[in-house]
Length: 601
Image (cartoon, rainbow, N blue to C red; front, side, top):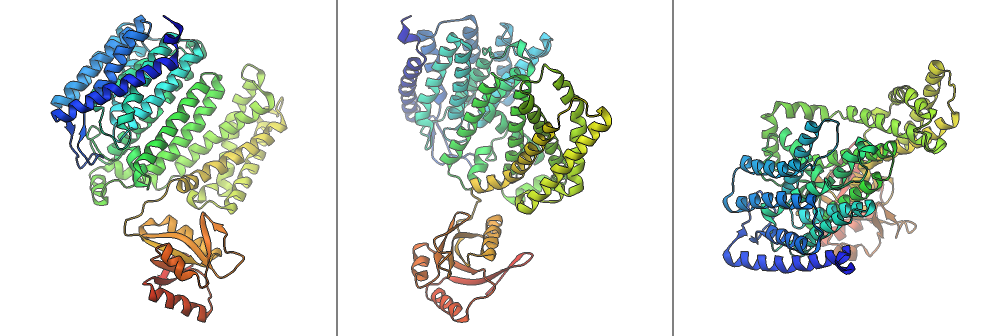
């Protein structure tokens, strides 16, 4: 085969062009024959949209594979199994078969791969590895199917996952597998041209099941790590490559089970829908998930090059981030409140867990135990370098339980678990510093009593304290960072509001407005009579002059309401502002921040 025909970029480009042509043809045919998906109350699209986009993905992949990719036993088996899943999905798109019938088809496809030796070598027991592989293939196939809930989401995430897989093949020198995946990437991107928001064609079950099976099966071809590198890379690399569909499926399954909703039933409670409910546009939500997928794919490449302990530390940090994001998204309302409450009342398990979730201290304790372990390992690594194969590794393992227990006890003593993360402030940072300092002292004393501090380094505990403080502050600030990065939802009837007074009271009032979107007040800026404050920015909002330009400001910013946050205001100035508001039909209220805000005219 000529060199140019084996170039991954050339193969991807040819497949991309073929994917565009075939998707256009399939869309035209489906539209003319009436094969369209009609809008439904539990679906996201609003217009009838052509179906069977998976046909173009399948044909592009198979045709280009036959023409450009060197055939191997494993790739032929994967194409055969994927064809079975494509046909099962195609029949489902036409006849709407039952879930158990689709599951049987998925077992047949997985059985084809297992029968030819494509398994995940996770244990020393072949039977166990076979069932793990079957569970992996069926799980990912259905995960992609569930992920296909918004324009461009499943195809885009699958493209990023396939790209991560292609990079891992390139790193490990698997050229045949690399070209095979490049054909698949081009087919997905060609379809994505027509599927990205606003989509003019959907892939359907024939596409999502084929794509999911291809991704899960292609991971089995990946030889990064191998058995010699241990279980963690073998398990973590494929999970990270397909992180977004795995996270979304797990998240939706748990939420629906807890709320008494059928898992197999369609709905608008996926990760993408919750991001839109927070105020993002459909495109922004999809692009944000693209970013998460790219980050996870990058981590999968990094883990393939790290040792066990470093991989474990990286995965731990990423897992903590996922838990925090999941907790935040679980609070987003995507259904009518009365429906949620009715489901909760019918589910005793849900009511119990909700009762526990209001007291999130258990989660905080587990999180801090992870962070203590991570900081202690980081201190050893920074001081000794690669220490896993030295006597320092035994020192680390022997003292780790004492360090974890000493720090947790210290955090409890100083009051770390009394605060609320959403209100974390400088005063809390002082509390964290006290807890970390006391934890370091108790850790040293415990090791001194048990091991006489023999062979241990005092500098390690200084480094550990600094790392621990950084990790604690970072974890506590995570919710606030997420709240700032993702806008809170507001009703269409929300009133645009100016805050009069850019001092401490105004800043407190701004935080209350942002923390309570149910008030339906959108702060758009500050006004202040102090010329030293004018032009400054407070939490992203500009401070405007409160002089004669106030009428113009209200007109240009479409202001509906002005809230006075200052405790004292000149009577004549108050009368001027009230007169201006009366002339322009702007509501004027005085807001005093005490224990909680209250308004009066």
